[in-house]
Image (cartoon, rainbow, N blue to C red; front, side):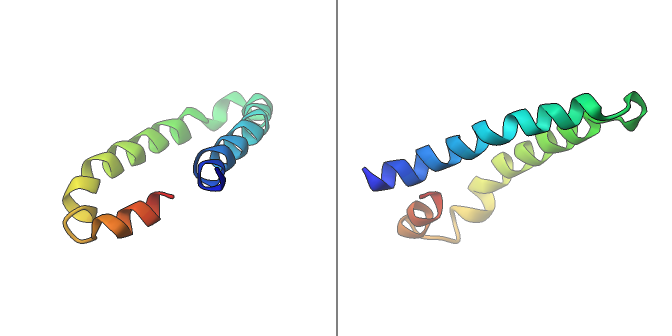
Length: 71
């Protein structure tokens, strides 16, 4: 139960509590600041990590190391 709480509960709690802060920041940012650039960079980083994981991480680490990293 503790592992489930640490692996899923804590990240969900952090994301759900920081969401309103990010929305407030975006609402107060002037239109000329191009806040959507940060969203596109975030999506690009997610895509790159998704594509690089099977090539860079999986061959170089054991299953136990990956399980510890994910939890």
